[in-house]
Image 1 (cartoon, one colour):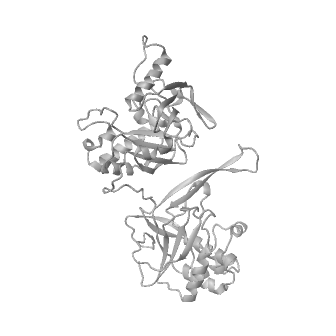
Image 2 (cartoon, rainbow, N blue to C red):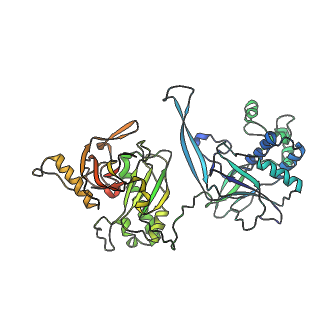
Image 3 (cartoon, helix red, strand yellow):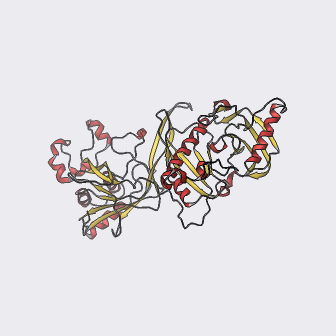
Length: 489
């Protein structure tokens, strides 16, 4: 697919974000444009000329655009990932309840990475090159105005691993998937189809066709716009999750994951989410190790003979809500012992879990690897409150004193059982308070699948010395029950 001569344009997203939707897709569909369409880039060049380089003669600009539209470029796309934010837009009302929910979807890249577009067998004369570089340098954003860019001509294609190509009729595509990309109709093709274009509208003017023009003329698409099929590598749309190499000396006992989904789970579903993560992790580790008997005991909670581990040496999976909206947005997977290379591989391959009820999957994005002292450095304090209900591991019966006093002793017993100091103060809490909502402990899923449901309780506890959070104690602690967070976030 290469040629001896090539025109290359580089695009850098300075904030690491590209906000744009493909042609015909509404912003609330959450569909992102990737790769950036050649049609969008050509329109950005026109905008740069009209607003910032109007001293350039129109014929010179048209000549450049003819070259860029004469063939479909190929791409080098760096690792990327989809993300989004939810925005409640004002409806010209003073009421805080009169808001429209908008999903702002965008593509995330490393700000230092460059996207390359390459046109085979196209060469520019020195004056053309100067003009195009000037036009590209004046483009400040691509797509929405949040997508700040630096664009310029790229000097060399050496060692470039092109990974997104135009597909032609009869082409065979192996190990890639296809998608439609917005491109510009070549001038010759446009002239042939002139009868289908608005009257007296030349090709150059058609490139500047506005949304207003489309609506007024009731067109389905801009006159010089066309979709072309591209083949894209399956590795293009996945972030490098930065797993630690076998040679790394960094000690890892914990990984903090961020949760991404249009519908995040409620805090009451903590156990459900933990169990799904656990099952997924066991399956991944089984594939990597080759058989179930070789699955990590830190993940399974059992030794090589199938006996339960003692001393809480297996992992804790602790989901929690970091922004106080009542929905789980982070998960800490932590253990007392250092993870080996194979275990890190399995944790790194843990990329998503499913949700019930037709809700979208949850993406799991690693935020930080390290020791619990590193990850929870900002959460070290003496005063904590329940994030999920605490369930005693022993049963209360007559003869064990006043129930509240017995509960207090059970909390102290479980702190010691999990390796924490004994609290100096334990006070009951009736419910979990979140921004705009409260959850009573009875609303939480309080048992693992197949276990009997028991009552749960909340507490505020104080230690005489600072400890790291989040931490969990009691029944189901390894699946997020009995989780405590600092009273002050």
